[in-house]
Length: 91
Image 1 (cartoon, rainbow, N blue to C red):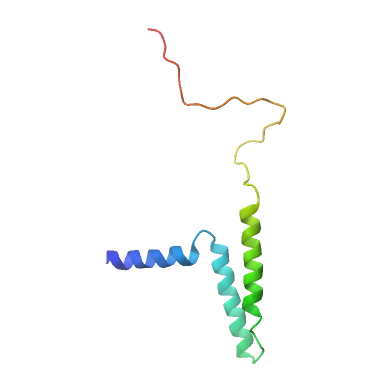
Image 2 (spheres, rainbow, N blue to C red):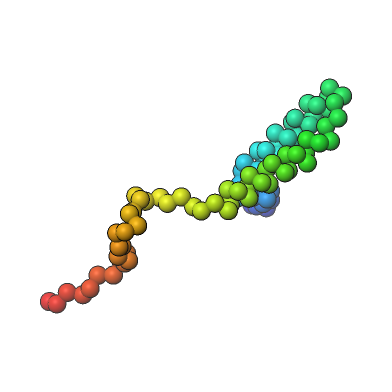
């Protein structure tokens, strides 16, 4: 059973990976291509278009700077480094 779970985890990590939106976009493009092909419409262009759009969006998201999670600080205010060090007290 452990081998089956490891196998399924591998495929989940391989397909979904770091960006689930790319996987969802590929599935959506496959559904659109299937729907067009079922109506006898040429659907060869759907996947190259989807790859171009999904790749450019993924690269744009990866290249932008990360959003800060804390409160915004003014640039003219000096900040002190944060440490977890406490100086020993004299007893």
